[in-house]
Image (cartoon, rainbow, N blue to C red):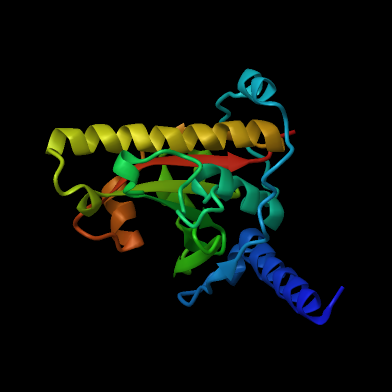
Length: 224
C-alpha cells in the first residue's frame, strides 16, 4: 500500500467510525451534527435479481441493531446513487427528464442527513433525532433508519400541478422499490409509509416552499 492509499484508507475508516457512532448512539445527537462521508458502496455481488424479487416484502417489526456503515452505504447507493462512470451523474433510479428532483434523507438516532449522491456522503441537516416524526406507528421511533423522500417542484416548473404530483409519486416509487430489493439482498427488512405528519416533518427538516415530503421508508434488521 502506498502513502496515498494509506491516507485514503485511514480517512474512510475514521469516517466510518464517526458514522457508526451517529447511527448507533442517540445520546450523541446535537444541534451541530457533522457531515459524514460514506465507505465506497459495493456495486457488485449480492443476491440474484429474481431471488431478491421473490424475497421482497413489507415488515413492521425491527431489531434495535444499528446498520453498519458499509450496509448503510450500499443501501443509499442502491436507493438513488450515481451508477455511471461517464461523468453524467445519472442514478440507479429514473427521474423525470433526468431532473433528479428527488432527494433522499436519512433519519438516524444521531440526527437528520441528506444523501449527496455525487459525493456519496451524508450532509448534516439537524442534530435532532426525528425518527418519531416520520410516521404514526410506534416502530418508527426505535427502528435504526427512516428514509424520507422529498420532491423539489422547482425542478419541474414547466409541468402542470397534476403532472408534478404524478411524477413525484412515480419517482418516489422507483427509489423505494430499489430499497426493497437492496434490503432483500442485504438481509434487511423494510416498509414504505405515507402516514407521517408531513407538515411537522417538513418544518423540522427546514424544507422550502417548493419541497414536499412524499413518503418515508423504515429500514432495519428483522426482529428475532
